[in-house]
Every structure is written in C-alpha cells, then in structure tokens.
Image (cartoon, rainbow, N blue to C red; front, side):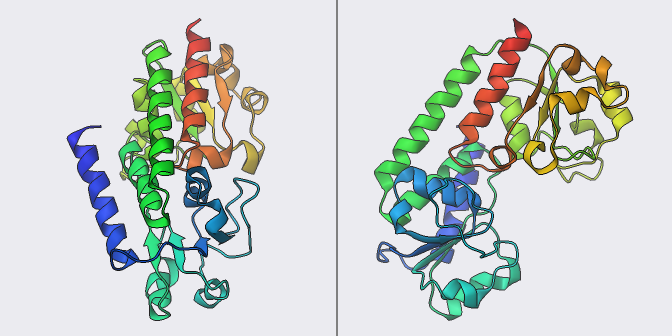
Length: 280
C-alpha cells in the first residue's frame, strides 16, 4: 500500500472511531447495519450472530436479517426499535448520527471507500469494534493475496474499458473506487476524458462510447436494468465496437460492482478473466 493510501485509511479509521464513542466500550451484541457493504463484512469476519437487523438493500449474505429499515432515509425511532448497541452506517442521512447519539446508541460511520486501502481499513475497524480482529485480519489478508495473484497473472495489454452503471451511459472514472480497480490492470478508462465536472461519475453519450471504441465493456446494470452482452450488441452501431466483436462484454452483479467489501475480489476476478480471455 502506498504512503498516501495508508494515510487515507488512517484518517478514515480516525474519523469513524471518533463517532463510535469511548475506547474500551463493550463488544456489541445487537448490531444494526444500514450499510450493505458493512453487512457483508460483518458476516465475513464472523460477527454475523451479533447482527439483529440490516437495511432493505443488504441482500448479501442471504442469511442476513433483512428488514424494511432504510440507509437512504433512516428513521431513528425505527432503528431504536431493534434495541441496538451499535449501528453501522455509510452515510449520515437525515442527521441520523446525532439522533441516535441523543438516545445513547453507539454509531460507527464508515463512508464509501475511495480505494482498497480504505476498504481494508474499514474491515479491520469492524473487527476491532465487534471483537473479531483475527477474523477481519484473515479476510483482509485473503483479499490482498487473491487480488495480487489475479493482477499478476493477467496479461498486460494497452486496453481501454467502459464501465456502464446504467443503460443511459453513466460511468465511473479512474478517480472512483471502481475506476481504481481497473487501474490495477493498467486499463485506460474512457470516462476520464468526459468528466468535465470532476464528479467521478459522468454521463457519456452513445456517440462518445462508439468513438472511444473500448476493448472491454463491463456492465454493472445487469440486475437492475436487464443489460447483457446480447442487449449491448443489439444497440444501434454497437456491433462494431471492439469489445462486442471480440466477446469482451462482461456482466457483473450490480451489488458486487457497487460495494467495497470482501466481494470486491469477485469483481477483480471477473475483470482478470475477461482480459485473459481477450488476450488469448
């Protein structure tokens, strides 16, 4: 990990720990997670039995106690109804942190990771807070080893990539968590040059994508919007795009492509497999 990534991860951990409360607090046994990424991480590190409720978007693992609670529009009273001793959030929507604080409920705020270093730091932090340091360390070590192995074994080619978030061509640049995964493979992201407002998530046009002629297309809108390699090939003019001609259109489960927890390994594997096949 670079010095910059280490510093960023440390800052994320520091900010979140300040939200949690005093050091040495009791290990929680009634956790409510309103972050799908945190839900996946909690179960991966062995803290699943301590989780009593998760939000309506936490669809993995299947055994997670999914409820109607919302992380986008959190309701303090509804959350408190589960009598939590820890609530994990990825955002402070509706000033929920202050609201829960007034009720004396501990909160762990873990914002969206910007890179793998921050993702690892958040997993370790969950381990420290829940009493599963070893489990968290094991998960992080496995993630690092697998990602490094996949990247090392994937042929390096000067390929370009188009990451599709929605069928109306919203994409993600190299300055996002998603984009940094592609940078591991040395890919050129066609969205970078189109992000004039520096949001990280520009909306491209069909004409722009056709002109860029990407070698790899990754669809992160398969579940939400029914997109597939066949659907892409049927778009007017797209049959001549390099990725379509060579069969390098890959569908990724929307939830895997949008989260920064343990399953990011699946995302890395899918990209590596597509590039290896494309290079064969």
